[in-house]
Structures are given as C-alpha cells and as structure tokens.
Length: 269
Picture 1 (cartoon, rainbow, N blue to C red):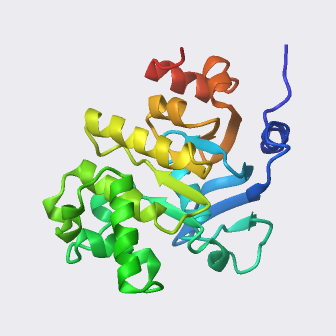
Picture 2: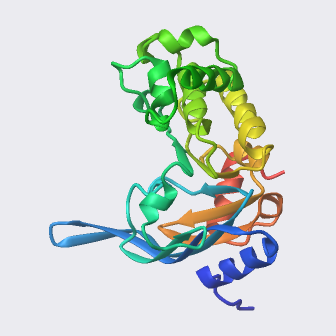
C-alpha cells in the first residue's frame, strides 16, 4: 500500500500541532543553502521548513554532510541562506543584529573556541564587550565559572593549560554569560571522554533545559539527544525528513534513514 510523501510542509504542520501554544523564536520557511565551486554548485540544505518555540529543546541529527552544522550556523547568524526566509522573534530584517547576544553557540571542539593568547577569564567575558564596570565584570565572571563547576583559578590560565572537559565547561560559561534566549550546541560532546560527556550533558540540562532557555542540540550522540531534548529533527542529504517528539520518534521512526540511524546506535529502546 502506498503512502503520501513525507514532505517538509508535513513536518512543519506536525510541529505546529506540538508547539501551538508557545511563542515562536525561530521560523524557517523553505530555507536552502548552496555553495559554488567553480561551475559546480553543491546544495547542503534544501527547502527546510521548521519552527523552534520558546523553551523548546530541539535535537538536529543526521549523518556527516547532512547539513546539521550549516543549519546551526544559519541559526546563529554566521552564514545566510541562499534562499528561503528566516525570522527571529518575528523579525526578518537586520537578522544578524537581532540575533546578536540572544543566540549563543557552543562549538564542537572547545579548543577552537578560545584565543590561545587570552586567559580563560578574558575569553569568557568577551561577549560583554566592556559594557560593565570592572567590578561588575569580575562578579559576573565568578558567577559564570561557579555555574559550570570550575574553580575561579582557571580564569588566569591559558587554554593549553586546561583539559578538553574544562574548556567545554568554560565554553558553556561564556555562552550563558549574556543570558541568551537560545543556546545552539554544535556537537559539544564529540571530543570528550565518557566521564566528561556525562558531566557536560548534566551541565546543559541544569543550566539550559531546566531553566527554560531554548536549546538547539546538533549531535551524533543519540543517548544525549534522548536525555536532553523534547523534539528531534532528522536531516538526510540536506532535507528535513522527520520531525517529532523525541521519545516517540525513537520508538516509532517513520523515515527509512531514521530507522537505520536508530538501529545502528542501540538506543531505540
């Protein structure tokens, strides 16, 4: 028996039903991104339609090259889509300015997050851009490092003096410093050992999810996805092929790629 195609618009309609009562933070309509190399053009995102509601915890999953990181960069205002419309809190104009300070990114490799010449404290305070008096900045720094269970002594150290887990904690502290509406975490666990992974998952849960901030988690780690997120969006070859409640999708995947992905990870049940 044939079934109707699982289109991007169908996914968006499902999302609207799930999040009907919540304000929309991000709205994407048929967003695509292509790169040109000489005469050849490569499409990495194709007609992605998605809404992210206030306080949601959304996972974006898919194989390497599926467009996950590209989508995360678009949400952070780091790159612009080739086509389509994206709005933040209802505005489509001056998007980069609207996003600034309200959307913070946690990178995959924490060593890429810090200037090797700067102390950790200086890097954590960078988002404030001298907007506070020195004594207020010192107070905010102390609160930030305590929030992620780092000793204040790390603030005077250089990135090379910290472990990967400590650096990722410092990345989270910097991301949370401005009280952003949205935290985008792009593969924040991939470079960490098992103990550090568990600790970072708990930090994200307690400091982002439990406090009602909006989380967008890009991850290969489906165990962390199931622990941290309410909804899951599956990308395959640049297309959004499945969206739904995280637990429901894990138990009842619809698309053949989602079924394959879950089968390979042993976290379906």
